Length: 349
Ligand code: ADE
Ligand code: ZN
Image: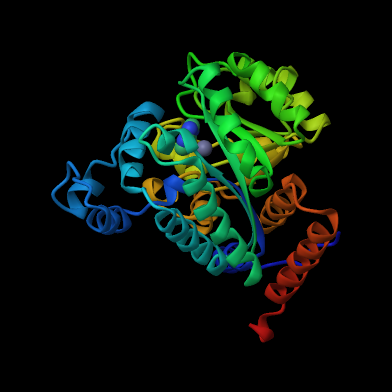
């Protein structure tokens, strides 16, 4: 496809305006401090922080685990179906303003069922927000994630509890503390999920080694790798990811905040694209990492000097990497082309 030339000063606005899919966003990670305090009040939950500012102050992370400890504590205010609805509705409304046309949203049911919240409460609240977003023109789906720091048996129990609601989620994923919890720990759970017809994704190669990405592909049969930035340390793996167009859902601000890279200028997103991988840009946990999807695009482009051509590639990759029907992907791609043509014509802006 021939891309029109676009002036570099228009790049930030183009990144915001272009249609895109978000494929790696944990709904619990979109819980803003303001909403944590509002829900704590609504539900009578005591918080160990005196103010929103004090809570925000605690968002200084040194690695994945230092973040997860605060992230799971924040989720403790979610109790009722209405809370899950409000959370997902707020994210989807924000995503629509950022020109997200399709979202595949992760949720962590074990974080909630462990506190006595029924699976039905979690799924019905999130699913209703997705249905409302669809009615307003944003495509939205759910992906259930198993917490890898918990046991295989607990993952099986979670799957069992979710099966009465299987029509409400399209896939399963694997998240939480990576190092020490390799994908193969969940081989049998994912085999069962494949038999049941779910899409399969897995976090791998965020902090963990390339071996975890191999396992996610060969043992879990993951269709996408979440993060995957450590793949650059294994040339054979890079060749395979490129040859098979295995998508990587990359999250630049997350990687910066969790010290995966010393700073954003060192991020390897451009290198992944240059190697022919189907990389995408996503926000991971926008309330904790300082920005939603457009901030991720704009900041990583500014820090690494990527171009409009790479913007087009990343948006096109996000549609290709999605689990949406081919006809929808084609429609979004045509809208992407329209956006680029609009930005190439100065008089019309
Ligand atoms: N859960 C929420 N965000 C996560 C991340 N970046 N890695 C692993 N698990 C997560
Ligand atoms: Zn994640």
